[in-house]
Amino acid sequence: MTEDTLPHHIAIIMDGNTCWAKNKSLPVMTGHVSGFKTTLHIIDRCLLRNINILTLFISDQEHFIDTTHADGKLMDPADFFFTALSHAAEQFEGKPIQFRVVGDRSKLNQDTSLAIQQIEQNTLHHSGLIVVIVMHYHAQEELAMVMHRIAMDIEKGNITSADVTPELIQSHLILAGLPDPDFFIRTHGEQRLNNTLLWQLAYTELYFSELHWPDFDSNELDRALDFYANRERRFGYISEQLGTQHHA
Image 1 (cartoon, rainbow, N blue to C red):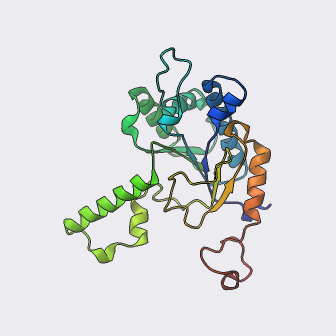
Image 2: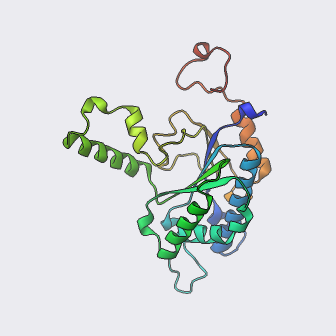
Image 3: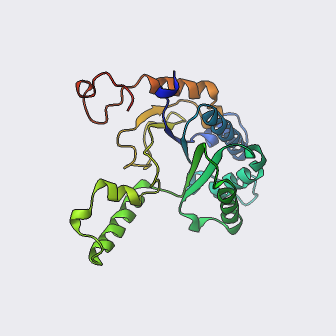
């Protein structure tokens, strides 16, 4: 594996924290804490590997119950994640990592919103690895919202139907301004996209790991990257049209 066979942009669904904990007869929160430690490790590994962009998906609210609360109250996984990230901020001091957060922030509590603002502001001018954290997001809702915005622009006379191009749609998506992921990873053995980046993953290479997210270590990341390095990326063409070029 060489640097020119590495993906520029990796997207990961970090799945399996709850099952990991249940399989070990541990509290659900322990699985999320262990999963967060894995997240920090994988960010560091991607930085060392000179990956340009790492997009990470936080699980939806309905998948997370904080069993440390006596009343079994639902806890937003984004609240947990960004609180933990704030506490881990010193681990990123001096590192060329820029954090961006996308998704619906209206569901977050005020402390989490402030934590996100602080994280983004403190890393705004960092160059190296861009880490995009995606929360409260569904691809079908994203595409519906984009279509609504474009329809409104047509109604107002700002654009015409002839102006509706893939590039225009792309400019309204949550990853606008960034290249689409080259490589998509999902853990926990699930082999589906789960309503994730349905537009952006059109030509992305897919890798499904059997490991739960807390067990996704450097060795598994290397196996995934080896898988990617041996893929021929054709972007809808056939090999003869691409010649012998394997990675565009």
